[in-house]
Image (cartoon, rainbow, N blue to C red; front, side, top):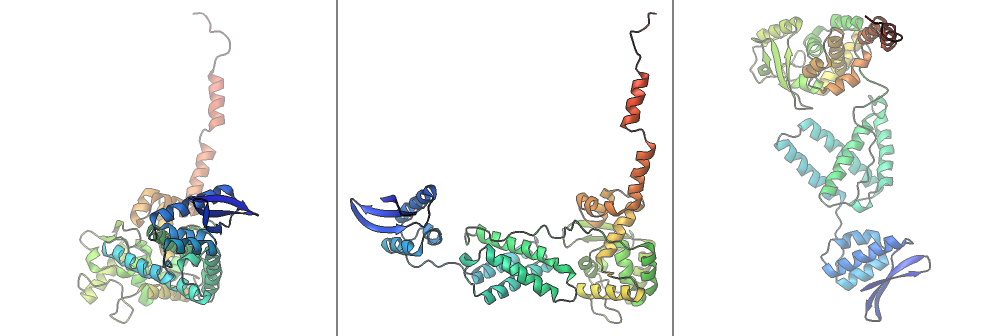
Length: 398
């Protein structure tokens, strides 16, 4: 039986055999309730024997000298704590399994692996290898280090990618918790990836679209694809001819990010450009629609990004990245009278996303509300009309 006593400022645990002290040791706490909980866990670990999972927890909860005395008494071998390398390997297997069952895309997997690689590089610099040694201070130092690394890059965008890195790390350590490799998640989120209350949609103006169209040249098909479909860059470069239905004048695709099926009516301008491209190349159904200009190699997402920025530079339109075309189509549809539901179905997004990121940037919608407020009968007018219609005094006899 283990008895609890206070010696000086801290509580101690005494393992008794009758009236004889077998083991004594400080619990390292001044709180009586905490000391009682530790005592109970020590008793349970001794009762369960040297293979009890509680020894791993106790090694971190009580002073090392106390743990060694009780562990040696129970015949516990040195616990083998999981390392970052163990978690890295296990999480990679988990990612591949998610891809195999269709719950994760390869591009998302690659982004997870990039964060795994960067965090592992930082841990090596800090000379930390065991998961039990990765606490909040370590993670917060990583965030500072990661921001510095991002800002060295050409397109740093204010190191906004840190939000996604933190979210990925939080998921990785949640996986460790689920597999009993950790007792607590050390990662604090930095907001939800993609959310920026100071930003939002960045649609092109009509004048900017005209400039881009004039300067498009070899990038005309890519420009029209992005302009009239609103596809994300990853979906645009992976679009195949099998997904282009000339008979129905539609594009049908399962989006990479949200795994939503979208059916996009082909605008006349895009339909004509696709028909010309098809007649020129006579491609197979599985061939990609977008190729690198003057080659037969499929266009990749980074290349599409670079070409759109270069197109913007030629046209005098700054920051003409592919996602701005998605913003443009959404705002254009809302301006023309489409509902958030229509836009959500077209883009494969949620209605909440459309309302949050696009509707606040449509001037025509705000003007429509202004006209309703100016011309409609509001609460005050209705109340006044009701008061004027109410008779005063008792009703007159017939």
